[in-house]
Amino acid sequence: MKLDVAIMSNTLREAAGLAQAAEAIGFDTLWTSETQHDPFLPLGVAALHTQRIGLGTAIAVAFARNPTSVAHLAWDLREASQGRFILGLGTQVQAHIERRFGMPWGAPAARLREFILAMRAVWEAWQSGGRLNFRGEHYKLTLMAPFFNPGPSALPPVPVYIAAVNAQMCQLAGELCQGLHVHPFHTTRYLREQILPHVQQGLDAAGRRRGDIALSSSVFVITGETGEELEAARRAARSQVAFYASTPSYSKVMELHGWGEVRERLSSLAVRQRWEEMPALISDEMLAQFAVEGRPEEIPYLVKLRYVGLLERVTFYLPFDPAREKLWRLWVEAFN
Image 1 (cartoon, rainbow, N blue to C red):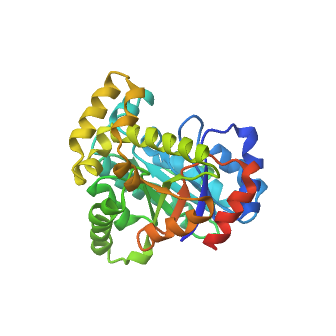
Image 2 (cartoon, rainbow, N blue to C red):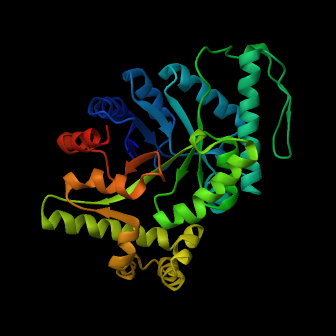
């Protein structure tokens, strides 16, 4: 199991220093996400200031872009990093695609499947010098003049990960992708009963094996050196779990455990923006299903105990602060 790290809301000027610190500590891969900043730009900076650490998006929103533009981004980041780049894509949800990005929405699983195939068709045209001729229901790409072709690369193909929650996306990951980003709002039961069986269906359909795909996820961690620190971490995790539990997209996790009524109450509070009342609905029993809790030195053992055989990569759902280097090194060394 590999331990990765995420930088989530940092400015571009901080990217080089954070990436170098993460590499020095020994993390396997550094992930960026599409929240307050573009996910690709920090990785370009990081690629030029590091030598070993993997660099990836977790995730970039596919439907805010097009297959050719993402093909260029991934191709260039692979070259800049000398093969260390991982392209992580996700669909987002209808409201964000239409109202935040002003782009069309529809048939997300089928559309993302075509997006990946179209992007790979562009890569193949560049690599082989052949004609670009991808014709799908959602994307048609038939023009690639030599002027726009960056030329072949001696580096391995860019690994593609996708974010998946529902059955169709998990099957797609198993069929086409090298990795799957599991949402942090999960339980081991959900992984075993929902995620993995659908991934396996996709693997079987494509004649692939479980070892051909890596499952990666952020993991809620509750820890602290003192009782006060531990309680503060518990409050923060409870609030985050309550927020995710209120979201309809993740309702199946709650329903699997028989917590559908709690989800409905949380959703009602969220609609009325009564955020401060929501954490109280997350019981200790529920929190224990979503978060790993223990003393700092116990965390690696507890995480591996929970996720061995389920996840190949984990990222702790904590802000990366290089000033806490001693603690990060403790955790990284326990994973190596």
